[in-house]
Each structure stands twice: as C-alpha cells, then as structure tokens.
Length: 536
Image (tube, rainbow, N blue to C red; front, side, top):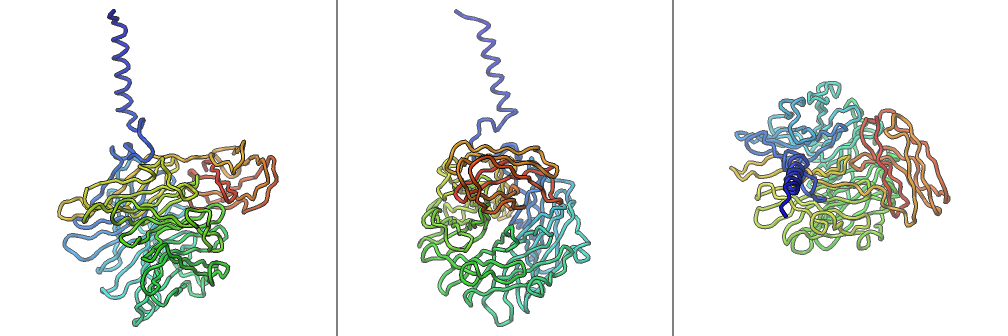
C-alpha cells in the first residue's frame, strides 16, 4: 500500500546523502585519494613566470601553511631566480606572504636555482641552492626570509649570502636547522679549476649567517669517495648532533648509493661504515639516494632509485646505526619497486610517525608522459596495500610531464607532494602541489606483546607532561619527540633496558619549541608506537 510517510522519508534520506556529498566531499574517500578540501580536487598549480616554475622542496608550518621553494625563469630571459610560494591549508595562495603569496629572489643576473628549504623555530624560512657568477663560477646561495616573505636583514646584513668552496663550483642541495639554530647546508663542489670530480660538501653557519669556525676550523667540510663524482642530496641530524649525508658516488662505471656520517665538529665518524663512509649498490646499474630519515631507534632509512638493467625503479634501504644493512628490512636490507614498465624515479622520502615510509617521484608511461608517483611501505619494507593500488599511487595532473620532488606528512596524517607539471600549453612548466587523504596507524604496534597502554597528560602540553606506559616484558626502549615531518626534536630515552611493568616518564619539551602537533614515538628496535601530542 502506498504510504506518503515512506515517500517523505525517502526524500529526506536522499537530501541527507546529497548534503553529505556537498559538505563532506571526503566522507567516502579512500586512503590515498586526493583531498577535495584542498582547492576542490586535491591539486593546485601555480604559474609565476611564463616559462618555468619548478618546485624542488617544501616545508610545513605549524599553522598548516605549506611553503614550496624552487626556481622560476622568465619567457624573455635565460636567467632563473629563487621562487618561494606559500599556500594556506585549503590550497589557496597566502596573500600575507610576499606579493600575492610568492617571493622571487635574485643574487645575480645569470641564474639562481633554489633546491632546499628549512623552517626555523622562530618562523623564519631558510632557502638554499646555487648562485651563478657570470655564467662560470657557481656558489652555495643561502637566503633567509622573515615569516612574511621579506628578506631578513639580520642574516648577513641583507638576508642573502653566497659561499665559495675552493676556487671552483659549489652547488647546495639541502638544508637542515640544528637544535642550537645553526644551519647545515649540504651539496657538492669542484674545488679547483682542473678538478672534474665533485666531492661531498657540507657548510655550517651560525644563526647570523657567518661561517661556524668550530666546524672543521673554517665552517666547510669536503669528502671524496672515489676520486670521481660524489654528490650530497640530503642530510639528517641525529639527536646526538651527528650529521648523516646521503647521495651518490661514481665507482668508475656507474653510480652507487653513498653515505657519510660526521661528528659535531665536522670530522668523519669512524664508527660508521669504513672510516665514516660507505657505498651500497642494488644491482649492476646506477643507484642514487635522494632522501633520508632517522627512525626513533637510530636506524637510517634511505630512499632513491636504482637501475634494473633496463630502466629505473624506486629503491629504499635501511641501515643500522653503524652503517651496516639492516637484514630485517626487505631483502637483506634493501627493497626495489617497479611501478610501470619504464622510468620510475624517487626524488624524496618521508618517514611517518607510525613507521611507514613514503617515497615520492615520478613514473613514466610513454615518451615525455610522467605522473606523480608515491609508494608507501610498512616498517618491514613490504608494500602497504592500503595505499593506492598495492602500495603504489599515481596522479596525472596535465597528462604530459608531472614530477613530484618533495613529500611531507601533515599532523592529521594527510600527505602532501610538491614538484611541477607541464600544462601542455607552449611547454610552460608550473608549480604543482597535491594533497592526499591518509591517517596514521597510531598505537597499533605492540612490540610483540599485548595490552600495552600509553597515556600522556596533560595534552595539549605547555612545557611538561607525564607519559605512562606498561610493558609486559623487558624491553630495550627508545622514546623520542618527532615533528610531523619525521625529524627528531629531542630524545628522552635511547635504547635503555626497562623491566616489565608500569613506567612513568617526565616529558620536558624544549623551551623554544614551536606550538603545533608532534608525536611521542616509542620504539624497541622492532616496532614503533606513536602518541600524538600538541604543544601550546
């Protein structure tokens, strides 16, 4: 029998569903789907010049704003300049930064490219790359901006400086900020005019931009692996202040993954690898490390790519604290991942607080057609099948050439990748930023035993809090505070033996810690457990 009440109820239900789709666009989305709250479709492109705008690196501010640095080149000039864009959390350009959300900076009239970016605890932004002098000599180029995008004149007088290493070329690729606010910049250098084989290069600056002479007496360190080509492409700073640099070294016929670890004074750490250095190969072709991260237990994750004999694949390896491969990870410490049937190149990586690993780059699917590519691994090196398709995620922005050069994880677990896209019109290259839905598996790791309980109070934290947890058997435990990009802020326990039972730890936050979301990460060397905390 027809019941008008039923008809009315059906209309109400339909209206409810329509409302959900209109006002909750991500309600039925899956892990790895583009976040429609980010510019409507999860994808933002930005054209600053009429030719090339390439995003090379990015950072996330505590307020959720995303800052991307790279290079821009005008239509009528061969000159390129540093370019920095800041986006609000919804993907719109932040008009309070620079001019309409963008800042460009030129050292010379002969070409400047920004390759790395870091955020200081006071909100200032440090960008590094290369400055070309008269088309011949290249130098480390460092710029520091205030939080509104203006140059910071307390940094070397005008906010800009260049550093020569030797008498030849030097190119900066990456930058990190130490806990004492000193600035570490990594890259590579040709030290003399007749030197055709670049070396690892590290430079440390005081917070005012002067060279730190406590670092190898002049603030500069170089290292040669092979008498051929050696490049630093990323660095990480350990809680003890030691610096791990990763990149590649040419062995005479092809490239090998290369790593070096330095003491706080710039000397090589002889307890790491062989005399502080090591090289590793995945196969008989080229191997290159493009990103690195430090686990709470001190193990080092290195991501990049490897040649499989025909083309390139994503590659990731895990090393113990002494530089030896961690055989509990993947296949004897290494994992190779083929995405398509052509070139798969990883340009950056990030370690999630729950121990999962994301590599980001591009995958080719034909001549000059590349897609953003992100692969996520579990902490043992196996593919995370909850991400994309069997752990692999592809995004086509322009259906031409789309490259992800940087990746980070937000406090809510969402993943952001940045790079560039060819818009298909007059070969114009634009900044591209994509945000993906995701979430952490917080607290799922149980260290092989049941009934672990973790409590942090108060939370949010002003300066101190209490961490309570229970162990059902003796553990070698590390406890560290990490930011949402996987960087260790401070360590509370470092591989200490603790008996079974209830434990309590006073958590004292660093006095200059920026307000925002962090993770307290507990690790026993096998598994991890993350507890989200907020600093007020």
